[in-house]
Length: 193
Image (cartoon, rainbow, N blue to C red; front, side, top):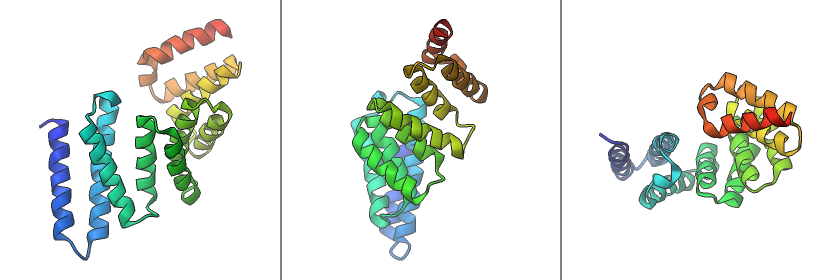
């Protein structure tokens, strides 16, 4: 059974649960929505974002919105919404969502990482660096935040520091060593340093 079939089956189960549950509607909605969002998130890691159909994106947005309707203070839903908006390129909205998460849950490293990604894409490099560094304060082994920090340090002309961050990221996550963008970036850093 393919990803989209599993997603459709899960979404159908979620809708049945929501219809059949009156007293436990809030918990049921949030659990099912987060389960669907997590499955889509895993699919995003396996496929290019552009390959997902608009229908799937709408379904993810719908699930997230339902979870937020059930509990507007539910930080994981705000996080998934922010992450989803970063992937869609809606950076200002993403930053607002991720700010809600970081205010209510200041120890959530992934929220700072995605905020850094959004700020980096907006070319707000100083603010992005602050977000990446906050993510690294919480989780020093966040390879993604290290790579983001590396890119920014490079833009700031700090090639040696950038190379050190890149090397540590590749040690923590060997998949970075196979990423052509990272390989080319590293070669450029070595020439520059």
